[in-house]
Length: 266
Image 1: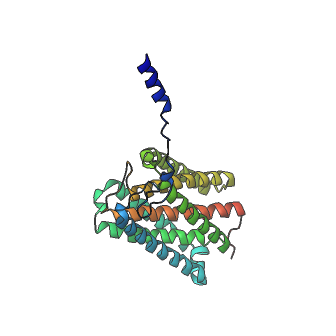
Image 2: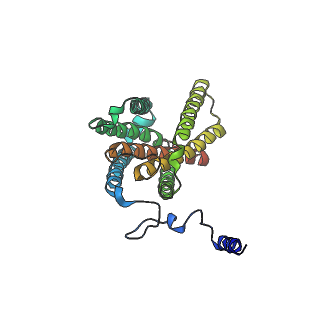
Image 3: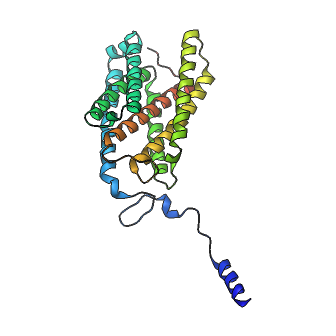
């Protein structure tokens, strides 16, 4: 009886282990280990982020060139050439995505380099076309919002919560949502009906999905989760990150445009 009482007291004296430690929510620095992050992949992460930054600068430079040139603005806004260029960009990205899913050789050099070049050209055309119809204020709002959102996604990606475990489910939902959005867009274009609340809802849901996918992609690049990229797949990681960031920016532009009703007028 005495021994059993001692055991019970010993059990009561034990403190429960907290679900999350405070050190899980800080960025690792030098000898400390604040956030759930290992510096072993620093070289790989630096490669990916450097390539993404270079690609984003090219797209930003092209958009700036289009917006600063009256001839280019007329080409993208007043003539049908801009629509054709945008559709060509969408078709190119669609084909590229299908090839990435179906052909494993697309992740090998030099296919990865070609993939990045095609992605920059296509996304730059799409971005230039969409931003040409909006005022500079909306572009600035969308740019700031996108930067803050990407930073928040990076902080969430560094936590111990593994978002990549749900990658398959989010991917399936994303495919279904893309098909639904395409059908709504096609029906609106064919019938000539523009229902603003429906498009706002689709853009908002698409933005939420985009943010979740961005967190997963960042965790795949950072590593240490259920799904991670190999260190020789830095170009594929750059492709994922670049397309997600640009797509997020374009959704922000359209959301601000619909909310503020400040479409560009020549």
